[in-house]
Image (cartoon, rainbow, N blue to C red; front, side, top):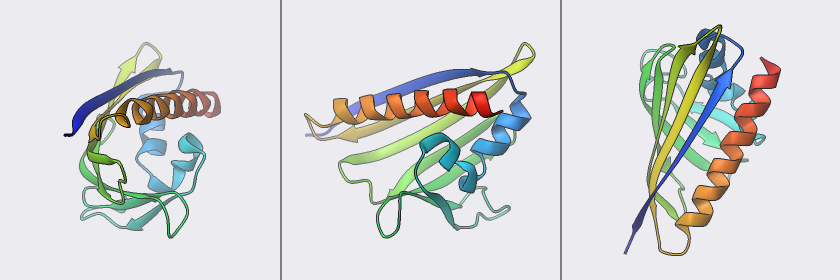
Length: 141
């Protein structure tokens, strides 16, 4: 029986929303956050990184594929794991961007299902990777 899990990470940035969104909405810049190869493998319907675009996280032929399902410039990005999720199923991620003082804030939430005994570990790894990567990105912007 599958169990549901969620991860939520918030990061305040010294940079404005437009700068943070520009990096996180560009598949080919996501290596700055994750520290692994991230490549756009399919362009979106209306823009390269927009709705319908697909990115691979990890080196070929390995890695997870994610498909962007919604984009509102400088406000939100939603995506799902569409291929090679392994023990992670029904993975849905969303990023919410907002102005905060002279900078900005990002809240990144991920919901997924997994087999008992695996999900807690996956959630901890995801939370640590996002927290570390977003803090590093904040220093670069």
